[in-house]
Each structure stands twice: as structure tokens, then as C-alpha cells.
Length: 117
Image 1 (cartoon, rainbow, N blue to C red):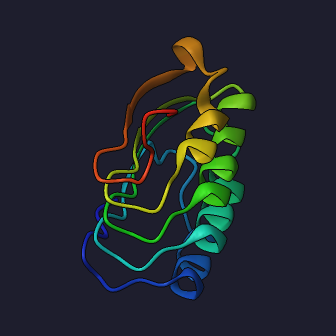
Image 2: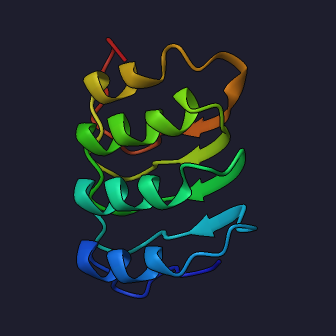
């Protein structure tokens, strides 16, 4: 599902999440205005999927959003995740430290992670 650059907000994402098909495996939500609340809605909508590619680059996702996304991995999903150009800090990245092989890729370019991340 390609929704790149559509100026989507958290409230827009809520409506989109209500109609996501079960066979959905790839979603590109890059270059929107999605924050932590929208990510929480997305995670709730995707929680039963086992293989996902999620592009949330260039949004407003912070540490709480990263925490929500880590729940997909805890639930047993294999995830390829792009969080580049967001507001994730080292604290947010720490949510993925347990991921091992379930996290296929984690892209974090352009975040404020610092040396401790």
C-alpha cells in the first residue's frame, strides 16, 4: 500500500487502518505527518500479520511510536522498518534491542540518537 506524501495525519491514519486487508505485507507511509498516536493505531491494525515492511520515514514518530512498533516484534512478526528522518532518540531505539532476527532491517538515518544509541 503506497501512501507516500499524502499529508496524512494521525486521524487520517485511523480511518485507513480500519480498512487494511489481512494480506497486506508492505505499507509506505513516508513523508506524511504521522506521530506516535498514528503509529499506535497502525500497530493495532497490523498486530496479526507475521511478515511486514513498514516505511514511516520523514514523519513525526518519536520514542513512544518506536515502543508501539516494538510490540509487533514481540508478537512474533518479522519486520523491515524504516524510521529515518523522525524524532526517535536512543531511548526509542532501545525498544528494539531484543529484536534479534525478527527485525530484518531498521533504518534510523536522520534521528537524534547520539552515541549511546
